[in-house]
Length: 481
Ligand SMILES: Nc1ncnc2c1ncn2[C@@H]1O[C@H](COP(=O)(O)OP(=O)(O)OP(=O)(O)O)[C@@H](O)[C@H]1O
Ligand SMILES: [Mg+2]
Image (cartoon, rainbow, N blue to C red; front, top):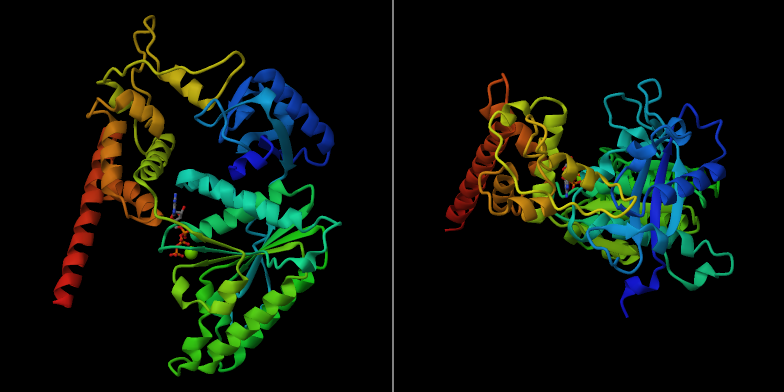
């Protein structure tokens, strides 16, 4: 039996409440209103879409900033392409108010034991959900809905053990997850984004939430024997914060191998006993935190082989974060180029001078169906009555649309971008997000830059990056000879 068939088909809707109106609204009533509005306005919806643009002049328009069809959990949907029939699913509607991180209220620090202002902060705390990380989730592109799957595991992990009828000591759950993978694959961004999503998705269980980011490097003290103590104090503070059972504490520990390095290696003589003490202290602290059902610890590492076995044994979810596939690379480049268009750094009007006709877009809509995809397709479809109609969308099309509409048009921007994406397989997300702007900086000289120019500049930046990789590989091969 497929695991997904065990899940009740549910659409998760996330509603951002306007912070200025948050004190006036009854949230339970607001959830009902949104549910009713969705059912009346749409027959099918697509996951990943913010539907708030369709609110029109309803009362909701003044109260909410975003109504996102955030996720679907359940058996594979019949409609495909991430479309769901609203009549066949339950709606799980969560409301949230984004907290501000203003310059006057920077991330609070705890455990600021260092006296020198030049020493880095050991721990930073941020109330969740927060504007500072509001875009993180949507900037990440992975195959197989990896972030959504991870989120679902974590939600279940946190809710199952809250069941009052369950004796938690029967199970060994540490609520500890490890994201590992090569540098720049998005592990840190994903950890913070998961914390943000958890705070929204679990708002019924935990009305407040806090992100605690531990700077593992700063916990390694230059004074011999101090590291263990610093780790102990940092976790002591987290334990104190977790006394309120209504507050979800999401601890993010980046580069965890720094303080959870293999004790075998420490005792083999190459490393000092301070590392060993640090690892021991961390394991003890984690065992103590286990008693707190409102704490979840998300760790990242790009050196999993260096991590202590006893630490790995405590990890409930170990998830490899892969480098993006060509289709994901296409989407990353597409989002970067479309952002350049949105910000007017790239001028699409220049392209309109010589539009190349595209075949009509496949319009896939049912009665009352409104989605961003169908709206974009409608905008891109040619109209015979308007002499100024743009025949190709001013934006780069999404991957599936590119395959359908532009596969046979090698000169179209979408098709060219796909060619480039396939050559970048193996690049990290960090490199991929840099290349479009690097290309623009290196190969264009101000004035009006068309989308064609931007794609060409990206092509050149990619070629240069491949050149560097080839030179590095050749150098390594020569070194081996
Ligand atoms: N799959 C991806 N999709 C989109 N953007 C990505 C992806 N992976 C990484 N990025 C982008 O790359 C940048 C670096 O990501 P991040 O710092 O989270 O990587 P990391 O895995 O923690 O790296 P490191 O191992 O060096 O700490 C971020 O701007 C992030 O948005
Ligand atoms: Mg990182």
